[in-house]
Amino acid sequence: MTPVIFIPGHLCTAEIYAPQIASLGGRPYLVADTTQDDTLGAMAERLLAQAPERFVLAGLSMGGMIAMEVMTRAPERVAGALLMDTDPYAARDKENTYRESVIARVRAEGLMSFVDQFTPRLYGHSPDAMAQLLPAARAMMGAMPVDVFYRQSAALMSRRDMLPLIAGFAGPVTVLVGEKDVICPPVVHQAMAEALPDAAYVEVPGAGHIPTLETAATVTHALHDLLARCDAG
Image (cartoon, helix red, strand yellow):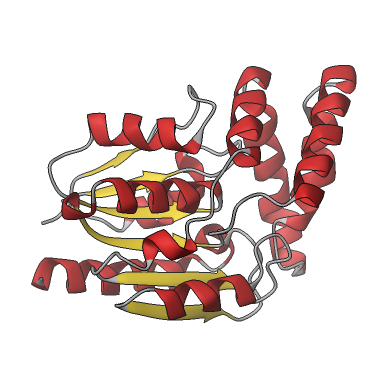
């Protein structure tokens, strides 16, 4: 069975993939370290240095951006990829201006000043999600060392345009997005699916930016469908 590498998003840990990891049975997996580097390229190189010879990638948000870097750097090692709620484009000026203001606020007021403002945007705003998932997201992100926030912010601000590069990846890919994701909206994922030669597109009704937890069964099903495609190939 092909191993799976889960790549966490910004200020996230393996916790965001807990339902999917629990579903793997005996399939080997590992979780990429996204905490030590300040560029997505360096994070991708660290992953490749620690990874088995061939693997399937699963990346959400910043994790999906790192996955795309890996796909373009070592396509022969990537059996397939699940790209979720992510962004293939270079950072825009407006986004970087926002991130610079957030960094300044965190330096002045602490990391929770960002976490408290950001986490309500993560889910599709169903009462269950807001009541059950939001406190866990706040705790996970708030526990991250602030230096990791600075490094990951720098990496997101310096990211490159991956859309023309991933078009050269021939392996199976599933592009998945929450219908109500306001951070990385569906239209971005439709462009990704159109650019990739062998892509399935999944839009999850009602879900926001972290469907791995909010609609775990749907994402787990999509992951296992992809793994079957990869194992068959």
